[in-house]
Amino acid sequence: MVLLTHSTVSVIVSTGIFVIFTSLLFLSGYALQQQSVRNIQHAIRPPDQPKAHLYKRSSQDSQSDLDFDAQQEVIEELQPEIPARTTGNYAYLQLLSEPDPSNICSAIVLFKQLFANGTAIQDRLFMYPREWDTMSFSKPISTALSLLHAASLQYGIWLLPIDMKAATSAGYAITDTKLLRIGQIQFMQYDGVLFLQTPGLLLDSTKLDSVLTSRPLPLRHDKKRVESYNNEAWIPVPLRAEREADLPPVYLITVNNIENGNIEARGHIPNVALDGFGRIVTGPWGVQSGEPGYVFFERDIDGKVKWEHNPLFGSWRAQQYEVCDGLDFDDVYDDDDL
Ligand SMILES: *[C@@H]1O[C@H](CO)[C@@H](O)[C@H](O)[C@H]1NC(C)=O
Image (cartoon, rainbow, N blue to C red; front, side, top):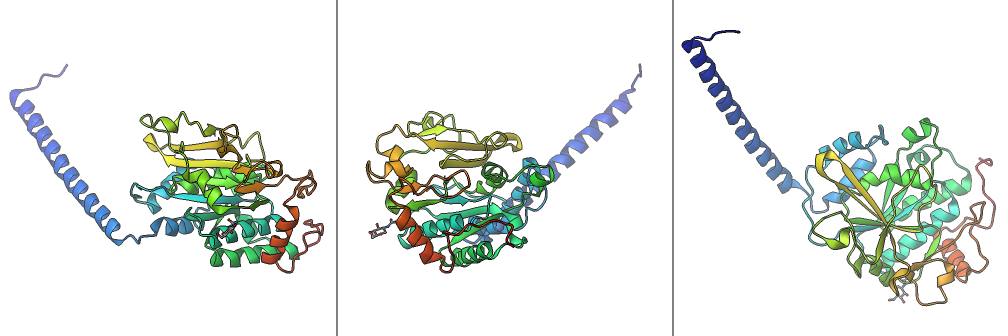
């Protein structure tokens, strides 16, 4: 036990007070400085900043895509603060883990039509493994990819190359679900992103838009908003990248920063039992019974589109040839004929 004299105690106390005041002074100065940095960032931010970030980030997030926490830091750096949006910010998503020319051209057809018909949804996204950018492919694939690049400028498509090295070097095959699992971090600036399976055909863009605009969406989980956890039109379906290779044919994705630096990623499918709503996006079987907005096609085991019992096959093929002139989709492609 140490005995303290009266003067030692008073020195300790006054030193303590000095330290506290200095710290307070430092902290308030720091807070003020941060405040003004934010104001400056706010003032110089261009109006379409989310897109710029999307683009910037997609070309920078090279390392460790699997590590969500590390990625989040990168994102926070690039994205000091996105102001809360009053109106929703949405995007349509096409995603391919295999460079199939027919599917690539099907995505171009969809985006071209959405663009031409003035969709109410702000953004159109195409997600693919970044490895495609540096690989050498057979002629049909490289032709389809360069047509996609040209279309991205013409029809305002945001290309999202996702670095899959972390997955492939760990021995995983690249599947649609894995690509989305790693790439979805790019969706933080959206309230929601609607994935539509490729191949498929758009029949009515206004109708398709109504999937996102006609009913309250679940989006971010919020105790104060009942639709966020108890939604008549949307059923929660988590992304199971470890167990399943394919995504649901229509899938609403919402990714947000939540407390303690965690990221909340939610997935929902439309309630097909809900009259009218459940059939806006449908398989070929839904074409007769009503007016769908988008029809996704089924694929054979070998990945080719099933044309039997698909009344839209002919019109879809014709539109593919329109955007991808010079390709022959009735040919068989494989990666061996490089
Ligand atoms: C595009 O708009 C035209 C004219 O309004 C309409 O006839 C056509 O069905 C629309 N196409 C799609 C795919 O929405």
